[in-house]
Length: 467
Image: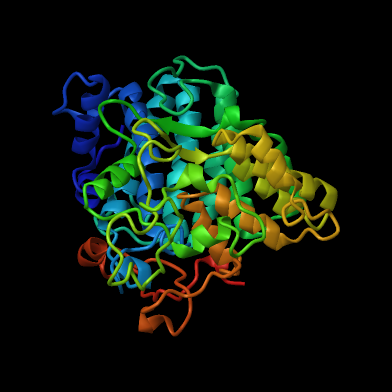
């Protein structure tokens, strides 16, 4: 195992954190002062758990950009798309990728092919989350002895690396293994077939970003998830509650957060679209007057709006119960990927996948069957194959991916063309009246590795967003 001073310096005591966090959950590490002795089982605990938390960390940045959430305070930087240093998110992504590097090396030495495969899929997932928001990132030189100031790899080349990890991971999961995963795998509890399905689902996700052929994407879809039972998620437990539940709980205690954008409310309450979506009441809270009222992004709650006069995340709903899962990838999302990929080559398949994606998300939220049937019967939802458009796919996918960072990738690919999605009030003037396209590099990275950090603006696009 190659543990280097470079890794410790670059990721900021990553390995010490890893051992402490593993120890706090299942007490699996015999010597917390000796990171190189950490077993792959303990590292897998931390990697699966922290990968899910990274979904939350990235979504905490992007949920305002796609107008799920809005700040209650006017001209808040998160709402108005000001540059914010995301040091913690950058650190946590590298934290997990460091652990995964160690898992892959140790598992290869031991012939533990299933650990190798799962770690490679998680490596692709975490690396893609980073590339999708930052663009170019250090990777090739980040886990070696060579330098403490690693060069940044090109974002398009990193996507090739991501796909290589997914293909290698799927292949390794099909091999015999000397050691099997189990409860140390917080995502699938060692179910190898579900890991292979996740690998294929992620291939479809990243290929749709890059405009791969329909046949390639649909092949990955066919080998991916088969139902909601395959969803990749991490459930939380008594020691550490779901982070969105914590946002809701803190908001109830007047530490304001999780206020819902007016755009999201009006997309589901019959204002922007003809029908009322039964999911709204299962996803966000009402005001004290039992109404759904959103907050305008960038404008805040207004002088008269106090706690209880705007909709927020509230405790004990699907996304905000203490033990609610963080969703990594879902069958519903895959159905919308299928709908997009098939749209120009098999519109009948595309339309059915679109309807199936809505149904899958509603079933996940446990919407009553009568309400599912009524929603799907509405002609603005089931408009028929001939009238069905790509806009319908993106709208319903936006609803189904509530609080998930993948939506910002969709929003940029869709050029933010969601119905009634307006620029926020008090928009960052440097954006010249345009929506944000990337996040800036973290201040800590600039200070420690500034000569290699690319010079970018918030309007410079990730490679797959260039067209």
